[in-house]
Length: 121
Image (cartoon, rainbow, N blue to C red):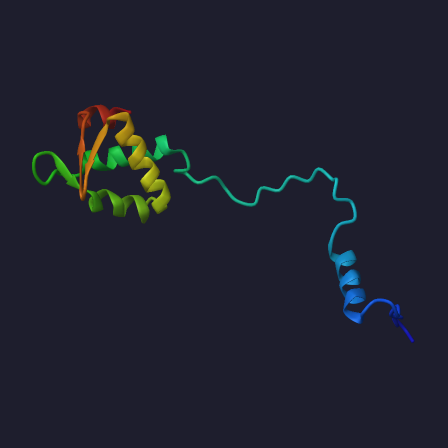
């Protein structure tokens, strides 16, 4: 009988099969220094970078009234063409508001710094 395996009587059959599978799949030496990079870094993971992009987007959009820009006008380009996430958008907005460069009021945002200064950065 080629490849026949005898099962120990004190262990169930599935335990032996699992042990054989794990020994074939898992490496025996877990102390090896193999470094794998599984994901790439997100472009807007840094809130300051996200805030700078949000400010640049807001500066090129024509204000509706009293210098206010609708938030969806900067939300859409940030999320879809630039491939940002909602969390990155929120972190960028919070960072820009804390720095005093942007004022958020409900569905509108207002630039606190002149647009010419933002485009030079």
